[in-house]
Amino acid sequence: MKFDDFASGVLTREMAKAAAPPAELWESKRGGLVIIECPQPIPCDPCHTSCPTGAVLSFEDINDLPKVDFAKCTGCAMCVAKCPGLACFVVDLTYGGDDEALMKLPYEMLPRPEDGMEVDCLNRVGDIVAKGMVIRVQEPQRDRTLVVHVAVPKDLILDIRAIGVKPHG
Ligand code: SF4
Ligand code: SF4
Image (cartoon, rainbow, N blue to C red; front, side):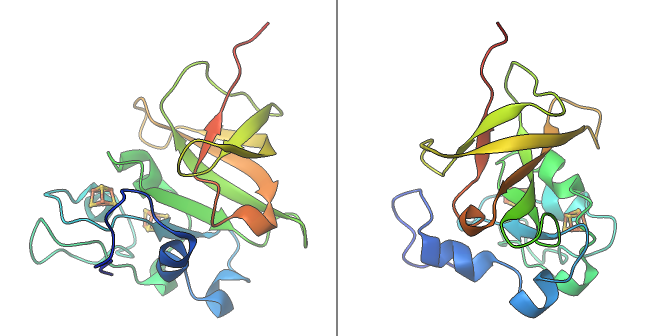
């Protein structure tokens, strides 16, 4: 996918919609589907090399933009942990009924979130747009990038792209 009008460094909601999975597949996919928001050519491909199912298609050139075969995505979030740009997210629409969804978000800060913790949900410019609940903290690559599973308001899945964790005490 190419975003020719990308200039500000922050994706608009319309651009984010274009990167989202097709609704008919997404709405029934347990475990969720990936969203990759990577609109500028850079020499980088861990989203592809880390994907165990081939859902992130092979790059012809290292500067290619990632392309996804959503039918192959399992929502495993390996790419979420491996992307150095924190540009991969998984969204599970089958979680939580009409009002909630589960997002699997990269997190590289301290303090470390814990299961059951309430966290701030941040949009692309760091504004707090909602509160979320940590369901699980995943370490798929056993490195410093955690994948935090957070229950969030379903109507904000195209806006929430990070969490903020308040220091303990
Ligand atoms: S979530 Fe898993 S299956 Fe889907 S694109 Fe990422 S690594 Fe591949
Ligand atoms: S790993 Fe991340 S930053 Fe690198 S090409 Fe893939 S989505 Fe873009």
